[in-house]
Image 1 (cartoon, rainbow, N blue to C red):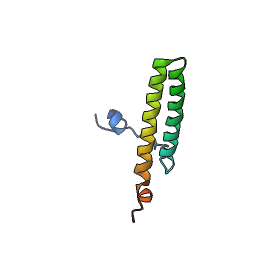
Image 2: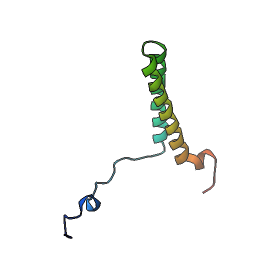
Image 3: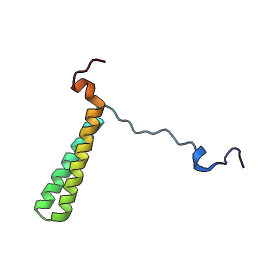
Image 4: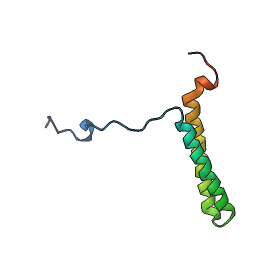
Length: 83
């Protein structure tokens, strides 16, 4: 019952993550969210009111997430805190 290859998902080795969050990642996510929100706003006021509204809301939330990540990664330099 116990041995190599036995134990299910708990003993499975996962490859290392390739997701790298550097100093600019939050800014890039926020900028993408801004563009999604702008497209959603244009759609909401022209041809696709309900869907455009939700696209705009998702873009706004994505922009907020990017801003949170940016401030979480760069708070020392933003508020000039000595290390």
